[in-house]
Image (cartoon, rainbow, N blue to C red; front, side, top):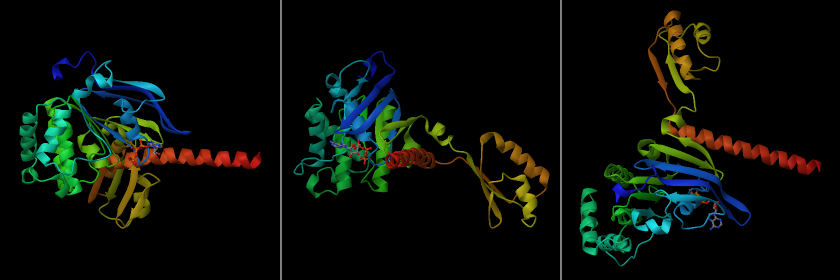
Length: 324
Ligand SMILES: Nc1ncnc2c1ncn2[C@@H]1O[C@H](COP(=O)(O)OP(=O)(O)OP(=O)(O)O)[C@@H](O)[C@H]1O
């Protein structure tokens, strides 16, 4: 199937997706393009509109405006068998054993039952889950059942894998298993789209990300591009801290002293001039770290800006109402 993807370089192309629940606009004009063969993260705080966006993309719910195409211009229903989907709501038949549950999910997407059982065993063994392969779902922990559902959603080797908050509810060991699974599926040639509000997974896995906050897309690009939205963080410890005024004079005005160290933010272009000033000043160096903020920091920065805009709008509205 991978070979006949069609002409588009994008497995998902969503344009202007908009959804109202009553008067509330849960998704507002969101566009996303997911390059074929990539791992793509849809990030956002709780209630941002991630699940609703994914559901519209997959044709599970209809948008009030906008459209989405999967594998070129085909309708989602026509390409069902090429998609693997882990919905936000988890659930398997409690009376089934893991192996059967996986084979059953595969069969729903057209996979031969016996082949499904064989692949179930392979997946579970490769992920170190072989001891629960013949365990009934009802006897499993929630996290383990979620792993089984995950495997079931990809057992038919889909070209596009859509996972809604796949990491939530998993312990660190299973989170690592899932990261491994995602990378393996990408290496197989699949495109993976997943939503999360845990930045560490996105940072390690994603080729591209979109950040959705308050119903709108607020950022789209690579993880590095998101991190570059914030200045570098510098921690500098001079050899001798006694001349505090002299040291402060070579650092940005925003530098704060913490014991013997100075902390401050700096733009990329100012790094080399700073190093020259430190060298020329003779204050020396016993510690110097210059680090890019993590994706987590960029995410919080973007979401806070959006929230601040909303708070300002609400204040304006309240003032206008009071004056009216
Ligand atoms: N069927 C529905 N009826 C009414 N409101 C809904 C419905 N589905 C979602 N919403 C609301 O739309 C908003 C977006 O929900 P959505 O589930 O898409 O967010 P999310 O980003 O996936 O959140 P989370 O990370 O908490 O799962 C939320 O305010 C939610 O309460």
